[in-house]
Amino acid sequence: MALLIKNGNIVTATDSYVADILCEDGKIAAIGHDLSAPVADEVVDATGHYVFPGFIDPHVHIYLPFMGTFAKDDYNTASRAALVGGTTTLIEMCCPSREEDPLEAFDLWLGKAQGISSCDYTFHMGVSRFDDNTEQKLRTIVERGIASFKVFLAYKGFLGVNDDELCKTLKLAQELGVIVTAHCENETLIAERQQQLLAEGKTGPEWHEPSRPVQVEAEGVHHLMAFAEATGAHVYVVHTSCEPAIRAAEEAKMRGVNVWVETVIPYLTLDSTYAEQGDFEGAKYVMSPPIRAVEHQNCLWNALRSRSISTVATDHAPFDFVGQKEMGRDDFTKIPNGLPSIEDRVNLLYTYGVKRDKIDLHTFVDAASTQAAKLFGLFPRKGTIALGSDADLVVYDPMYRGTIAASKHHMATDYNPYEGWPIEGRPSLVTLRGNVQVRDGQFIGKDGIGEFLKRDCTH
Ligand code: URP
Ligand code: ZN
Ligand code: ZN
Ligand code: ZN
Image (cartoon, helix red, strand yellow):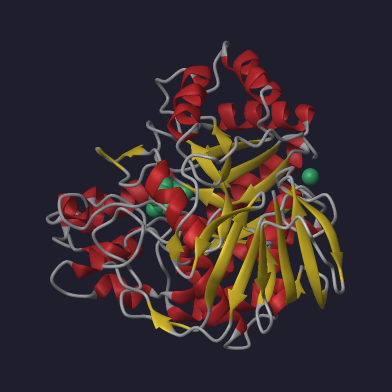
């Protein structure tokens, strides 16, 4: 099967040029001018469009038992939504609780995706406990193609690790060349602040941010940096929301710590006033770390432009407003944490980043695709447009104008945090290994053809 995409403006993390792309047997077979393809099943005219490498979302939750409920999407809805938004590869957090066996959990999470996902996928293996049996099981999981771990320095007693476990995880990762992704917040300070606020009768969603102030996040990053420095492990700080947290990572970087920083689209586009909306609307914007005051947003854009931030993910963690967010009506600590954005990340980053002159097109591709591929052992199979790379391509229409609405999104949630937001561009065609999965905002492809991506340890 062949597909020829003609005359698109090909944009990678480093280059921009007009050319044709021939896709054969799932790979990019030729890039050049006036390519002819007598055997091409389909010829797409991409004149006036960008052609980007398939985008990678390196931080999503799909199967997620969490805070007394389950995240709303499954791989059917989440992968379709991802593809419609231009994302062709997902890296999901496999998040076993402390009581679950790591190998059983890995198989459980894998089973949720296999044969169901319509885009490619892999996992960061969550380590929520490190006892005598853990090490061998983690080694087996790495042999099965996992090249990154995940630890939580929050959610103590459920997902969070203690310092002894953190140290052991980092040492093993360092030995294996595995990168460790980490949620950084000081759980003790959070618990203390939550109890104090509730005792003062401050129960609404607007108190979520004050319960986890920026110092709490910065302390988490400092803490991880000290352990990374001591063990030599390579680490990746997930969902960084604020200036002090970025500074903590930057200072460590200057000391020689191998650390990379992720932010997520909600922090770049929303601010703390959204959680202050009345009628419990604010609950739609409760996630951890919290969405910050607007000045942090500016800092994040600058850090992205200067490449202090490597990646822009979603931390897609979808919960309905009705029945799920509502669990915390009388107590903000019971609102399931997380926002759905797997479908809208790329269009938001393009519209509110590139089109508003906050970042250029190459930074956009780098942060939303290439860096994730490089950091997590997928490059150059994914993350670029080059001979032999997977034919995961996004033909992007910069002339499209539309608005985001829950009524037409593909995610399973009953609301969209970006309801009514204008979008200035969207994918007109999305391919996964040469298969056309999306046309003009509609999933028209093959269900369940997503592959589990085995990765090599590269750190
Ligand atoms: O609020 C969030 N971020 N929910 C998902 C779980 C996590 O901490 O990433
Ligand atoms: Zn987290
Ligand atoms: Zn997360
Ligand atoms: Zn490394």
